[in-house]
Length: 140
Image (cartoon, rainbow, N blue to C red; front, side, top):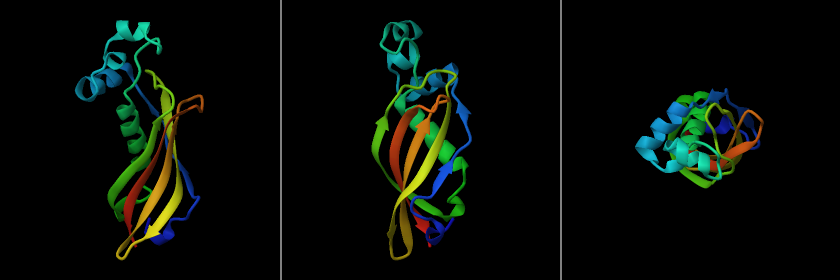
């Protein structure tokens, strides 16, 4: 979708994705090896009462769900930022997530335009687990 085709307040909803315990532990082992992500016994004794996904893992899943919608397609030039990232609730094994993306800002540039989206991720109970503003340059 070209820059001029994108409208402020336009909203999109992704498909869903179910997170497994094995995936949570594998991601965390490589990129965020903290006990609440990789040590079942310690995690059970924590305030979370079990293994939870790394916030970074949740962000990666959320970004994949957004990207898989292919809204910007070949018109995306590059990402420019992530702002106001919030991990609002933990993600547990077997949680099913989906994403909504709302266009909140457009900035015209000389050869392209910058689009900012409010990306919000929810679990199967429609409880928000993540929110972030993501921006990208898009072809005119």
